[in-house]
Image 1 (tube, one colour):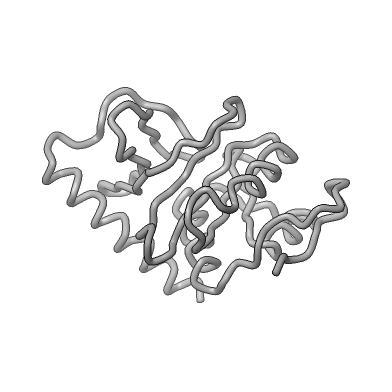
Image 2: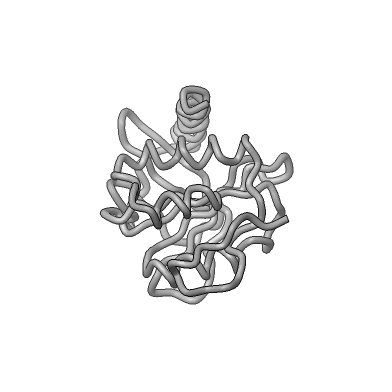
Length: 174
């Protein structure tokens, strides 16, 4: 079942498959952590109702699904093109374990298999594949060349810390 369409964007297509409550709390948690204002305009509220939060100052939109890849990429890509922004698609189903997919506004393909990583107050999206770019999340996505950890233990600890922080933010958003 698809959620409501957004007439403002001049489309008659449904935007996203229905997003469950767990996925919605994860979207809110990730958007809070990115720490950029969420669009509260009428259009932003309609996007939120459809299961997507738009952070215009960050040039970023966040949505989630419990579907396996490549499902929901087409719908998320359509939203990114309409908003002219980067997209983050959080896959929070049991099979995906909280992985992220990133679609940069200036690229055609999705970057899949990212994990959140944190240290102190910073948030990073680190790739599972060594040839993918690394992103620091600081009010937007910034590609970086150097990893923020120095060992496998540091990588693992940062991923664990990020998942704990997201879970805490998700609990507070209920």
